[in-house]
Length: 300
Ligand code: ZN
Image (cartoon, rainbow, N blue to C red):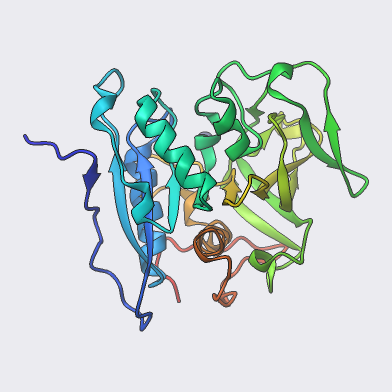
């Protein structure tokens, strides 16, 4: 079977449905992950394309141990690059093209385990601001969490990155003024997901948008953890969401079927691409007490 690298037209390229004359060009980077990337990248593509705002391509790397010299996406063709990748290093050429794209003011979405990737690549760690696993520790930078309404940077030694049992949890707004946040509730209940905790890194968060309390009862940190934020890195617009653990199938991925995950992803991706958010908050957005899920990923 012939494989086409680096670009594969994805699954639903035709689903541009609204009157938006010029959809935002988005690239999903995937192909290796300790997660089910075969599910997650299709789901992200569905979410983006069902909104009618985006036209999506996927850049799929060779599998683990493959020839990474073949992986040469043209980042510059896109207004936003969504990272769904946690695997082998890219080639030096691709690394430098990616960083050029970022530094020229590119749009980036860091999704879930993409913040596990490339722990030894200093500039990449500044793109994600906080990361986990892959031998991260106090040398990676401080922990960052919220205590008594203030951001705390904590240099104490220890591992970077962990999570307790999956569960439903409440998202708490921090910076309500950011365009991504306009009209979103102060508190909403997220569907069953991992809650990343004890992440560490350069901690160059620009706007901390949502946190959640990582309960020791669920084997969490006992801290109010940063889960959705933007990153301060030159001219780039970077949106980082730690939510959205992929399930076994597209139809069984509750964290990604959560309306709150989908809406924040869409708003973050539009902002990363354009600096604005034109989307209205939909009526099916979760409340502080009730989870809301789009099992078929259809948007009202
Ligand atoms: Zn996960």
